[in-house]
Length: 448
Image (cartoon, rainbow, N blue to C red; front, top):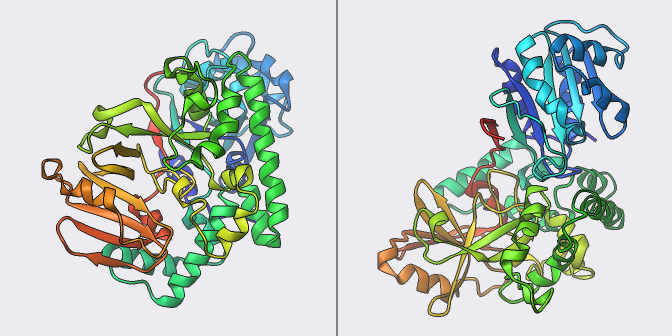
C-alpha cells in the first residue's frame, strides 16, 4: 500500500528550487527513505539512475579515479539503460555511506549542473568510513523518521478534515466531539503497539494481524543488531545498552542506570556509545536539567538521561510481551511513560525537539520539559483516572522564580482546562501530534 508521508512536500519544495543542491536523505534503517525517493523520482523525472552501493559494490569504482564531473558521469552511465537527459534526469545514490568518495564528488556534480542528485543512507551520522572531503554548501539535508501519529491516522482511514477539526480543538482548548475522540484514542493505542515503521504499518493496515506486525518488527530489530555488529564492532558497550533499553524504561523513574550494565561503568566511558545509537537514529536520549528555565540546553545534566527507542512499535516488540494486549484494550500504563511524544520529527515515536526531564528530591519528577518561543512547558503523561493528581508538576509550577505559566497533562479523557495560575491543560494522548507540529529537518550542510 502507498503511505501518505508529509515529507513528500519537502521533496517537491527541493525540486522546485532552481538553485537546488544535492539532497542528502538520511534516517534510521527501514523508515522508508528508498521507497519514497523512488516514488518521487518516478513522478518528477523522465530518466532515473538508482545505484545502491550495498547491492552493487562494483559501482564504488566509478568514484575511484578522477572526480571531475565528466569522468564520473561517464562511469555512471554504464549502469543506465537509457541516455541521460540534461534537466530531466535524477541520479539516486543509495547507501552512500558505503562510498565516501561519492559524497566528495557531489560538489563537482552539482557544479556541472546537468542532472539532479539525491543521496541516501542509514548510517551517515556515525563514523564508519571517513569522507575525504565533505561537499560543504553543495548538499541539503533531509532527515526521515518513522511515520508520525498523524500519518498513521491517515493510513488507517482518518481524513484530513477530521485532523483539522481536532487541531482546532487543540488550539481553542475545547473538547473533541465524542465519536472522534473515541476513534482517535483507539488508533492511538494501536499506534503504540504498531509504531511507525512503514513495513509494520502496511502489514497492520492490510491484515490487522498483530502477530504479522510483530514479526516485521522483530526483523527490523535484528537488522539493527546486525548494523551494530557491522558498523560499531570496536564499541563493545553498544549492544549491551541497546538490549537494556526496555528494562531500564520499565523502572519507576525510567532513568538509564549504567550500574545495571556493569558496577564499574561510568558515563565518560559510555557516552560515545550512547551517542552512536542516537546518531544512527536508533535511540533518543532525553537528558535531565538542573533548572526548568530557558534555554534548557544550558542547564543540561549530561550524565543523567532516559533513553527511548526511536520507534514506539519497536519498543513494543522489544520488551512488552503480553502487555501489548492490555494496552490495546485500554490499559496504557505499561507504556505511556516510555513515550516521549511529538517533535519536529515524527509523532510519539520520537521525543519533542530537544526534550528534557526534571527530577529533584524537593520537587519530584516531571516527565518532560520542552521549549516553545522561549517558554518552558512542563508535560506529564498519565494513564489512570486520577490524572488530575500530579504533585511533582504542582511543586514545579509553584516555584515563582522559574516563571512557568502553563503546563500540559496527557490523559485518556477529553480536553479540559484548569484555569488556576499557572494554567494546566488536560489533553488526550493523541494531541501530542499538535504540541509541536512535525517538521522534518531540512538544512543546508555548512560543516562536516
